[in-house]
Image 1: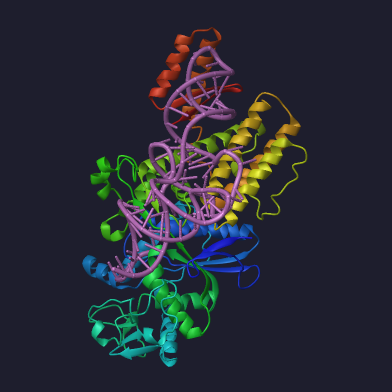
Image 2 (image 1 turned 120 degrees about the vertical axis):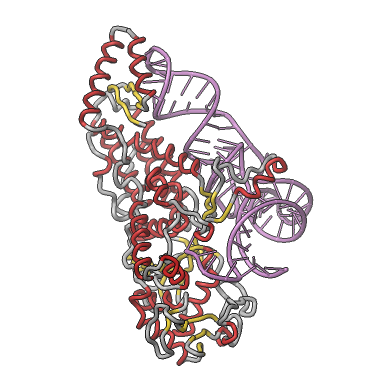
Length: 510
RNA sequence: GGCUCCGUGGCCAAGUGGCUAAGGCAGCGGAUUGCAAAUCCGCCAUCACCGGUUCGAAUCCGGUCGGAGCCUCCA
């Protein structure tokens, strides 16, 4: 049974979709007024993984991520740069999609844009007015928080504690906590015709309208960053439930936010607190666009999407992730042991790991271990992995099972000396174990394709290396270790590592 | 001030009542190697602090200290 932490009930609940076997997920996506930063990728990566796991568990999942392409900040940006709002939205959406692709997020089914659903947004607003939950004033439309009995239940605050934005609209609101469903257009602002005059949607209404349009009045999972609980999701929930008179979402899921560590990555040390106090005060900062964080494209360039994805998935999605370059580097080192095993497997069996088809469903990947102690261990690791994932998508625990699996497989190869000896039976078991690793890692969305600079280079490099390795082998054969070591040390200086394995000599760059 | 959350080995990070507290990185010792690299084996924590509940707590309750988020745009 899959268990999910629900922000609404503040506890883990058994996951039971509204309709057996079908799951609807809505994740709040970006407002496309600027380039995305790494913090924006946490939600998409975890929900991409969640969808994979639910699909793997036999469910038919529809995952929606919205794009907010009309908003005050977008309008300001448009003025600053002197180009139309749509142009900015288009540019930033493209940037967002590119980043998602680089990080292996490819499970999204629909990405609706607010500007393409204006009719539904206006209709939704009208419905709320008709039902007495909203009122129009001078071209603005506000949600009447006082009319909603349940207001505040998601973020656990009373309506009057939830003081909304003051600003210039405050004078027209009945109550300070009322929020805008529709904003009257000023001057040359982008606008759409509505029953209340020209204007644009408020921040929350698009999600209520688009989720209803695609997933229905009630759906299973609504996700987003923890910072969206209030006011965004609280208001969405209020709009939808007042409009429909039934629960909007069964499980509200919120991912933790990311913070930036300092340059050394040493963050939050517990000893020598006094000595470090001074610098600690400035070490951790929230990552946000308004504070100028950025450079996601650079991060992807230098580290690669897989490393970033793996780094994020090693922490539970509800925890705060402290981002640091050294942390990413470490994730890269950890990934190496997987890549080496894949190469080792290919040398033994001739099968390219990346061509193995991942198992589509969890029951298909089960196997009979018989009296094979090795396969029993593999089955145990697989079960542990599934248990971790069942428990609120504990990807951090699940990755540790992957490492266990790698060690178990390497040990098996060593014990049976599979690199030298032929053993059909052992190789069959090995293949089964590696296929399991393929199955489980595919759920996390990693190891889909070989890493960028894996073994091998261009034709010329390969030929030169072959020659050098042959020369070194001759030197070693005649016990001329001075020459052999000069070759190896010289290569090390230019970043090439030589490995003398039992089955031959290999090399790798970097 | 109100509402949430967190504090596990040098660093990162699972575990939320009960076998010897996962896993990764770093380090140390060993096997292997001509020497290395890779791989394998072994070593390295009583869970911020204090008190309480319990046969039994890192895990529950209270307090103290420290840190974070939201309450204003934010994934």
